[in-house]
Amino acid sequence: MEEVTKDADLVATNTCTVTADAGKKARDRIRSRLNRPAFTADVLVSFPGETDAEFEETLALAGEVGFAPACISLLAPEPFP
Image 1 (cartoon, rainbow, N blue to C red):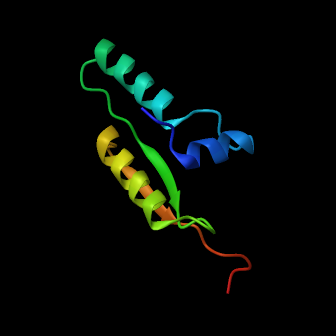
Image 2: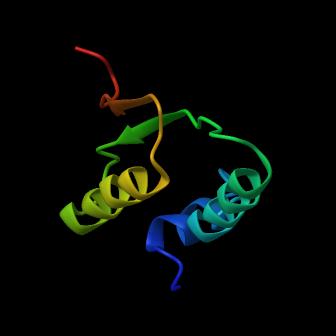
């Protein structure tokens, strides 16, 4: 599976060291060992420069992982109004 652009950007800036693919592999390992584990997440969207395609990739990944529950928030521009 090809790494999504956001993963590369986050790893390059040391913001995040886990890619979507690595996260999915970890999820699969956990699911193979535990009965019905639940995964939660806090997801920020609407980063400056985020494209519609990147946003759609985020939604698709969240659906694929099957978070229960997930908090998805818009990134507020600075300064706050």
